[in-house]
Image 1 (spheres, helix red, strand yellow):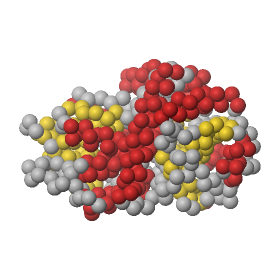
Image 2: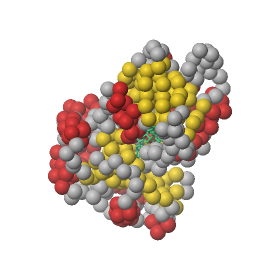
Image 3: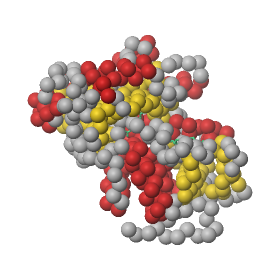
Image 4: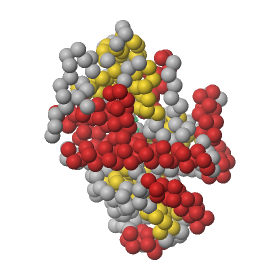
Length: 412
Ligand SMILES: Cc1cc2nc3c(=O)[nH]c(=O)nc-3n(C[C@H](O)[C@H](O)[C@H](O)COP(=O)(O)OP(=O)(O)OC[C@H]3O[C@@H](n4cnc5c(N)ncnc54)[C@H](O)[C@@H]3O)c2cc1C
């Protein structure tokens, strides 16, 4: 391995706030460039927030934005609570309405195309960055190039799916529409699932456990790149320190100094930024997952059931199932009822994929979603950078986002 160049003694270094997948990937990209990095999180270890037990899909090809013309048809169900997997909790909060209106402004065919391609560009950078990382460092995180099948149960949905494939094809994305017979050939575990009208097959899609990844990469960062990591440190205030740095104050009175700061705090991004007059349009979209032993017909391919809005992802001998989108819910605690709904939906979707009677872990997390479905990666103030708003795809986009923000720091 080539070592990064040593940091100069005058360098106060870069503090990366937040050790989710995005923060850990950012720390890596900076350390590779020879920066002295201090990674800080208020939790007891890395990836204990939204990165903990997500759907585990590295969706490099399926980057379709959340808002598109189809949203208008879904809206009555979303607002009225008629759809158990996708519902909005309306409040009078102006931030909620500002975000919702911006989201609706993105629900046009033109914005859907533009936002999907913007995310695709970052996803393809992420795939390359992940491959380069894994060439340099062997990390164990149940990583597989498993391919993905996006299952459709209504023939009427297929033309729109085909249009999205055509949109991405010029960028080298391998995806094609397949019929039910071919679904069964690609993934024999789905052979007896009734009602499949067709599927989008993305053979190059990957999967991996984000918590194991973050822990493994952090170990490499500490041992091979000299990255310092502090956990249990809840930062409460950022302030300019003289002309060339930042002062970071923690809840327990500790103070850190940094030449540059990168805010990777996921859904809590605005708490530190708002007092500085910086705002990132973030909405919490709560989701759930559970992990259970594989069942007798556990697919090896990663599966998205588009009608029930569920993903199935095999991690070794365990099956991770994730779903549910509760807009404007800011408490990550899983509700037992919603959890039971998710298990029931999964059982109805792929009855033999997992041992649903032996669910090992249940989890809720808050996706930090922007109205345009791609993250905000920019310099917000002199020496202050944000890497926030990775929404539905933060695991997928983390590596490329780290590279982008590190390039911005280098250029600043
Ligand atoms: C149910 C579900 C399924 C999903 N499935 C997928 C999927 O299959 N593929 C995919 O690509 N993405 C998926 N996602 C999205 C993905 O998990 C997120 O986009 C991603 O985890 C966001 O990472 P992050 O590092 O920005 O945030 P987080 O993981 O939340 O990390 C932010 C960190 O900042 C810390 N922090 C916050 N404030 C402070 C502070 N003031 N001081 C110190 N530390 C602080 C927190 O403790 C936390 O550890 C899913 C999400 C959910 C909820």
